[in-house]
Image 1 (cartoon, rainbow, N blue to C red):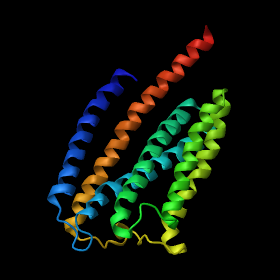
Image 2: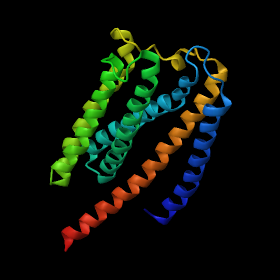
Image 3: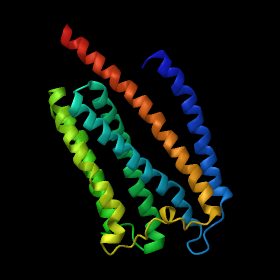
Image 4: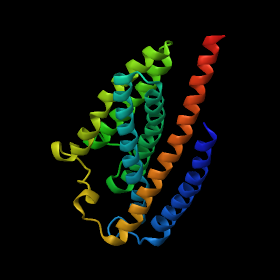
Amino acid sequence: MTSGGSRLVIPLGVATGAALLTGLYTGLVGAPADAVQGEVQRIMYLHVPTVLSAYLAFTVVFVGSVGYLLTRREGWDILAHASAEIGVLFTALTIAAGAIWGKPTWGAWWTWDARITTTTILLLIYLGYLMLRAAVEDRARGARYAAVVGILGFLDIPVIHKSVEWWRTLHQPSSLARGAIDPVFQLPLMVNLAAFALLYAFLLAQRVGVGRLEAEILRRRLEE
């Protein structure tokens, strides 16, 4: 990564850390317990931000994949690859947090709920995306194949979003989208949404930098 990029990453990291600490405090300490679910409802302040950050990450994968197929510019591929790794991390955290929330709420760690199932499919698609990249030795060919998977995988996101309307599901429709969250819960949730968006941006900047270094090392090896 360039020195200019490094100078931007440092304040971004500081802002991310401060936002995460603020979010943890407002969600775990400042906000009251839910009248129905009690303390377990606080997992919302992790569960919702991670899933929306995953959506953001896979949207960037989609844009980067389209950009690469149209231009064949390596930068688009590096961006898509980096964002896919982060999206997989956030999706796994989403499923784990949902299981922790589901056990006391529904009485089970896992159910074949439509939203849980389609979210798990999303995780598997992008795990396959990363495995495909690793399996294909030719970098350009692997990037093309992965770009197609990255675009097709993105189509699962609207399915996840609409799953609570299309099928019988334990999940309720999004209270955030319907504006049905009490302000006392909405404020800490919004703080955590901003914090995780910053975390995504920080991780993306770091991983893109690593991707550029990897590409440069590969080019030099090929020139030798």
